[in-house]
Image 1 (cartoon, rainbow, N blue to C red):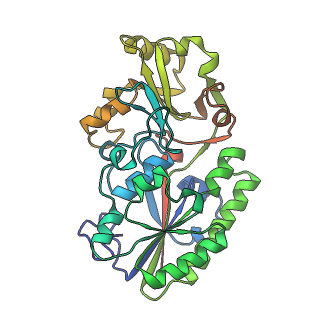
Image 2: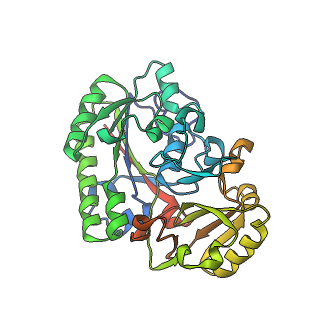
Image 3: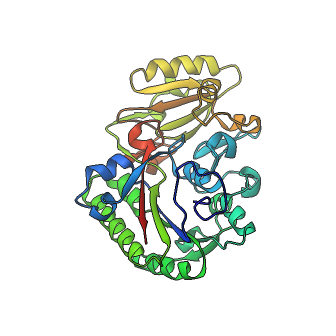
Length: 350
């Protein structure tokens, strides 16, 4: 998109030039999910340009950092929802931006320059339209540095905010999270989820109708989703707790931090217990095979679990005592499956 605005020569997607760009980011709208319900989203379905692949884990903080920096997870360091703070023996939740002990500085945790900072340096005033509750949060500061925040709550208010913003600037991102929320609670494909998909379809149509001449609307997502039917509860499995110091990550992408000298035993136990349900690898195997991109910066290695357990199929790894709300959900994401990593890319031009 920077290239389409004439601000970069890196145009991997071969996007055509545009005077103004709007990115509509729909949290949780996987490519397979959209393809399964064209009748509920006829406008979106009619403007499909192709499919993109989210990084690993296929989760909101990781994908937002990838979009915001143009770099893969191994470069920007947002390698999970719950990550170890290296050398401190505590977990940091980068979605809520919470951790016991001292606060975590977003500029230090994710130090890479954002594309929005590059836009601002080039004279563009990028605008981010999202709910007021996200303004000023650690995650917003980490991945949206350089953006001017426009708070808007309802779908209609966000459409109007985009319309006004595109009169003032040449770049706008608008975020909508209720598709993801409905999928987590009731499962993707549920009645509530379909209602939210219809809302997004109408939002995209209204934004497209309001585009000024020479403008383009792109629609994409941060990840897809699966509906879980097989839950492995670590808090009811003493064998899976043995040798484990901290359990991080999330239900479809677990970071397992082990006690000194226990890594090999934990790896063997988890591989045996989850055979046929999850990929279980070491930190080094995950990094060397490119799960986080071509390379992982040395300073980020300590954030990754000694062992990673990444379910496939409809399996999730929950911790009902430590994470009661997360363990009760229906829809999940984070793994390496196409259902979770493949997201649509749509294009509408004026």
